[in-house]
Length: 161
Image (cartoon, rainbow, N blue to C red; front, side):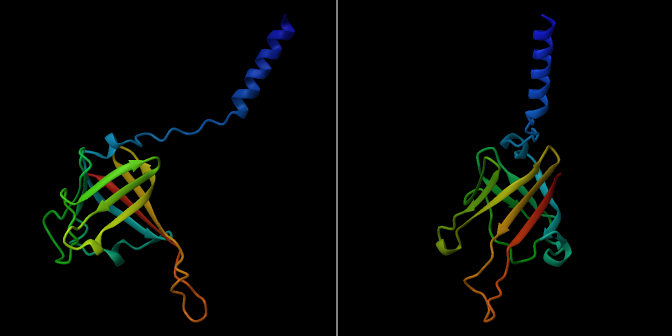
């Protein structure tokens, strides 16, 4: 009887050690992203801080808003830079599928401006949204020496306001 009990303890120990638990990333649901004003607080390109090089102060007060009905709004708050692309709930939508955040825009008057951005979600919690947009290497437009641009990893970190 002691041998059977020892065997069961040993087998249970081996399985609990060898079965690697997949970490549960809290809040990777649509409920976490909805109902908040998300403000950009960090931006890197391939790991290098580029926030001040790529965003004007008038951009840094903008809020990304993900509504429960799937509409996406970019709220420019108090200041605008004058060259904003229109993102409002009538033409812009969002969704989360698996580990991706999709933001889509449809311009009915200018269909060539339609786009979908698919971000990989790195962190989504009650206070932090961290996403990355991966732009692959552009071999089609390589220079004469064959040097191509990219790939680029554009990482955006937002804080809930």
